Length: 554
Image (tube, rainbow, N blue to C red; front, side, top):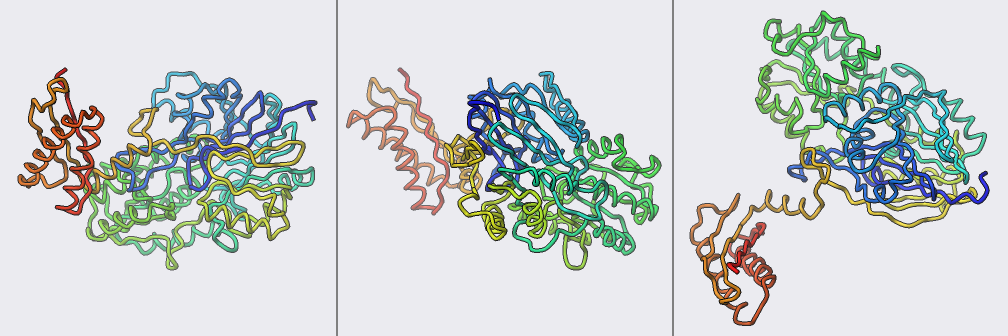
């Protein structure tokens, strides 16, 4: 232990009480390392938003201490925030597994990030000395190759972060390093941070190889074209699909930029093996019989701009759904995406497609996350003094914490935190720490500044109830209206001239009252919003966004 070493603060800026935007920080007085930098994809209730990222305000304040970003694996909820993070703070080095490193480089290249980023690859034998931290790794099974857990030895104690994992004893690819995890546990672990995504599910998560039988059945039964949608980063699933497609002599068309990029990178590294003559461009599909075609695409979560949604909406230029097509959703719904998925499913069925989702009939998806028995085993192997569940909705974190308590970890040693809340590790003991800003930031396009929740609420109001803008010219000096109000509406009673005329009258009357009472410019805007909102609600029982635009000739 370093003499007079400072306490260690552990906190998350994303990944707690949500599934996504994983960003975990370990900080001393002099140094800061970050584990993962992810995004969360917006649901239907956040119009005009492309990504949700953490608030990096705390990292900006600690920018001089930032030593490294460590990536556990290549999923978007762990690497998708990197372009936004590096535009907020300088990241000296990114340590990432081989596949994740390639995906990060591709992402930065596509987004034309000009800053030169030092990306260093690691494997399970790597040992890093980063300031006062010693960092080691262990391989875990997940739905993407090259996934790792992270061991951080600090002057105050040892921390283990599992990353995303499942304990799959018959995996597609490399096995989880259980003996190495157990050895770390024997040596002593102060704090375990563990994946909670499937904490509601008893038993074991089915092996990825269990999906293979269902994929075979689907290919055997499908008489027309097969369109399979899964996460572009679920490389194990993609490998199984393409193997079966080749076996059934179906040509494979790959649709969706992220799917194309990931498949190409995975083929380059040998994680996905597809004969060149089995891949066809999407515009060649018409040259083959229906039962000779397999389409692999993105959009299993119903994302409006993803390939499957565009196909369902007849917006994809080279592919239209025809009766006899079989569409397979080979993934489970991320919490909050159920409505989006249902919309896409209904559109596909209306067009004559036979749609298969994860059900009793077809096990077309196996999660990459641990169920309760695997969570128990991880806790037993690591045998930590303190426990902090991560990566999950609040109910998942809570259940994971209760599970840890049944295994003998005292309740006072279990920390169910929210983003921004910290705990302090000092001389192998942990107590609660202070809180930091951690509100979600909503990214509109690629603008790194993002928008806050107030703007988002206004957008939601506009989407649900419309907008009314009142534009009026005044002379504060003369105390009167000099340009009569003009009313503009969007998605609200556009054809109702009576309501618009009455809004003009109300605006003029309110402004005159304020001038008579020596009110301020701010009073005018506030009163207009309140009075017009009350009038509109009485008449329509709707609450549109009211925007007064008041111009003073002075």
